[in-house]
Image (cartoon, rainbow, N blue to C red; front, top):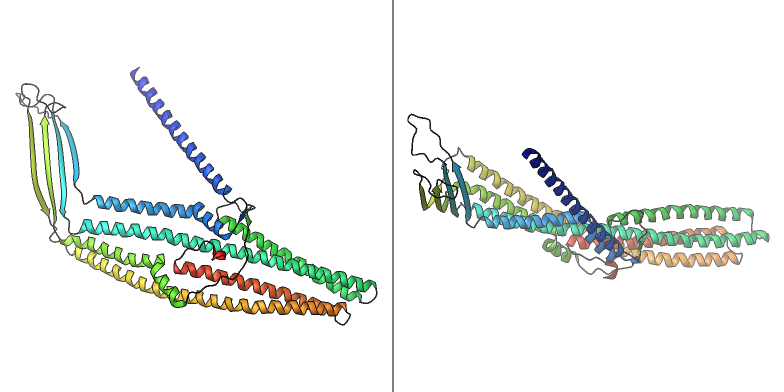
Length: 458
């Protein structure tokens, strides 16, 4: 009967724990769903680049994982700091000694012996091990915070680049639609001239072919725009089929920094550059922790112990006993010789420090090359914008002149179609120059370690 009751209690506790875990998970799921619903509601209406970037920084799970890692490292630093303080330990022991002999000993307590001890220990000198571990944990916490900032910059660059590619595709769709309108007008004019006998059937057929080719190209560009929108949705943590309405226009954003200013900011602000320097310091702390093996370790302690022959440490019975003792002192331990184990570990740690220094120097060189490459790309795109603007103006003027000549029967339909095609190509080139320039600006700001969520409003 008693076993049945115990089993019932065990089943009941298990069932209760299961219900508790279920309701906790259900509550967390509901809270997460409400949070996601609120985040999605935040993107109602038209979304510009700044809103898209800020939403991605708030909702992206990768950044959440990196933030959790940064918080974990900070707790690790606090844990390492706690090693400097005193340690309190408690022990409680119950022993019963049985000795079979003739005659039976009468001095053994019938209920056994019980003891409660408390010890306070304080590390006095650990060969700089505790200091090295704490400094390493502090540097690691700082490095993980920088890793979070680096992840934010990478996410900003990814979202901005995708947003610019979407605007590029959107502008190309608009240019192609304008080209189709021009070709449609040209087809109507040619058909009217053909109906009156002023133009041959060949001109009508050629205009129809050009219009169909423009339609095919428009379908391709519209597909590119839909693909870029799906990519942008994914970066924002939304479904690829989300009908988010992105809004923006490719514009010229002045960039006044010189290459020297970009390099100065990059070496001062870039998270990976700072992390590389921290990696050298962390390796140095690892070596100092290894070098603690050369020194003795000193610890002070105080303990007090109470003993009795009852569980509450009291004296009971004819042969019972009770006592209390305390002790205070210090002890030192020193591994004097270990067959070179500490020495070679020290040399290994020293080589790792050198490795980190070389990697830091290599990173700084690569940063310089990366900055200059992006800076030259920016200046090239900037010059292309000026050329493309002039090309669009000339192509537009040439198209209008060819169309006027065609209407006055002094020009050919081929001239109109050719100038219309060149105008579309010029507009595509201008759009590409704007997009490449803005992409270079976005990459340069990230390469310098600066956050600018909305490039289009600088």
